[in-house]
Image (cartoon, rainbow, N blue to C red):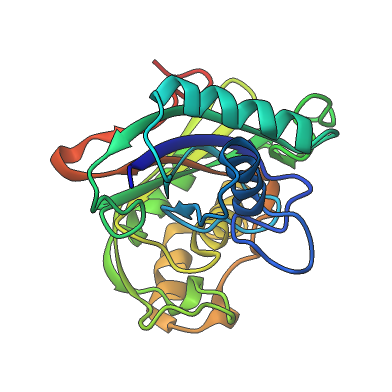
Length: 264
């Protein structure tokens, strides 16, 4: 039974998230329906990470087992064809690539790192093309101050302050490898890298750092909030529309990712 590794991009608008649920359409459910339409098989598509309702992906990685081997290009094209027919309207999912994987490859458990990007459009004019794909912040942001504050969060910490009350992780202690803030024209990007993240962690970081960018908080305030280990000390949680799973890292430090807008 061959195993295929899939790289998938999606607009999370209109989905209840990656994970299959009973209360609405999911990315996982749509992919599983596409596999069944292609092969007639009821399968489970396993993702490298779960994204919440309204969260997007430049490069989610998943794996799926099929009963017989197909050319990788055939798998990619067939799944995209069934997705297109099954999901008319505003929900968009595309399989960017498929490849035969090792029999024991696991999209989630083999991942050694994940990278998320949060997009903020920082301008007076409202969003047109980027509605539901970025957070519109009207007030001018000081991205240098945001970046300086972000460095207070890098490293191994108890991130209880930046953890959703619904988080199911066994521990709030995580190692944040990097957290960078940069401006690209009207956009401010917050990019986080770690082996794994707590529920809502990047969105909590982003909302807190916007407080810094607007001059409401200082870097010391961010450090104090982290040290408090108290969810009530966190800044506002940024909306899901600006968050993207940007890459998944496996062995040898190779990131499976789609080049981001304005990058490379």
